[in-house]
Image (cartoon, rainbow, N blue to C red; front, side, top):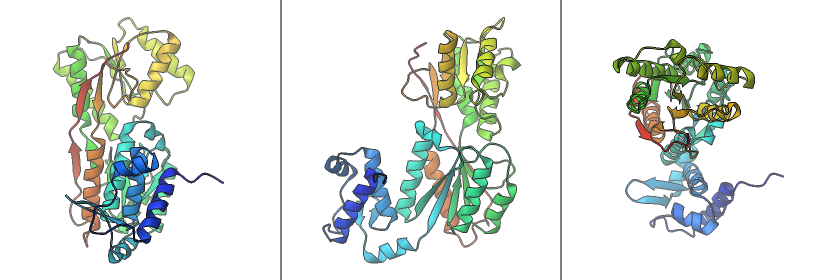
Amino acid sequence: MDAVPLYEQIKQALTDEIEAGRFDPTVPFVTQRQVCERFGVSTITAVRALNDLVAAGLLVRRRGQGTFVADRGRRREVEAGGAVACIVNGLHGLRGSHLANMLVTAEAVCAEEGYQLVLSNSAESAEREEVALRRALAQGVRGIVLYPVQGRLHPEALAEVRRRRVPLVMIDRYRPDVPTDAVVADNSDLAYRLTTQLIERGHERIATLWGETECTSVVERQSGHIQAVRDHGLAGRPDLTLLRPYEPLADKPRLVMLSNLLQAAEPPTVLLCANGYVLAQVAEDLAVLNVSVELACMDDSGPLGLTSVEGSLPSAEMARQAMELLLRRMNSSRPYAAPPRHVVVPVQVRAAASVR
């Protein structure tokens, strides 16, 4: 038998104490720090346990006051409240902070509003995404947050979501062929500012390396990069800005691509990677080729310290605004009456100590 996760053990222990009447509903409930100290767990585990208790209706959060034990009426209300489906494009993203921060924030908002967040992993598969969408409809969810796979696939499933009047908000990227709410980072500005910083550092030959190539976030980043190159009076190099996949390739063609790029007559002096996963793969491949070159990243690179310049995505704010849009639609008697909105959240760019 699999061991019970720590957050479930904490949740059960606190549930038993709540049901036994050991907490005064007029006094703030135990804090995240107190849960960490009492059970010897991380903040993430404590937050998960407390969020689940809020989602279950045992606790209620009051702005400016804290978290309290909910009364019986509130518990019955939450039990009838329903669920929100969250369909994400590959849970492997939890290795980094972007998707993790979005999920933690979305779950916290759902818990505060009395909804359960039902998570599905499309695993970068359009077929799995379609199955998840149809399963969410069959389960009667109140709304859907979708981090879509790349491409323009299964429009029928998305049309069915709309036909059933279930609100849907896309996050991180959007589908140009689907009229729905979306919350995205300012990807064009992100790439423009990163490229500008690299040019100011003396780089005139900047190669871009990509993972996905058929999603709006990537197309916007490529556009921002090319615009920055032009605005600074540099000659355009299609071989350096080509929108081609790198990270998904098998080892041999990937190494050949990188080797040819670095052995060109005028090779790039810096490699600008689309995200942290591409960055990690490029760093590994450079080690195999025994080549050193400066690295930059359009995303958070993590704790490895590989980059000279990198972007910082507003992950939590994107999730918060996506949930606000979704809840507004969910609370309307005519969820699709108002036209769809696209919210663009500002980004940050930071210099990091390079190991190259």
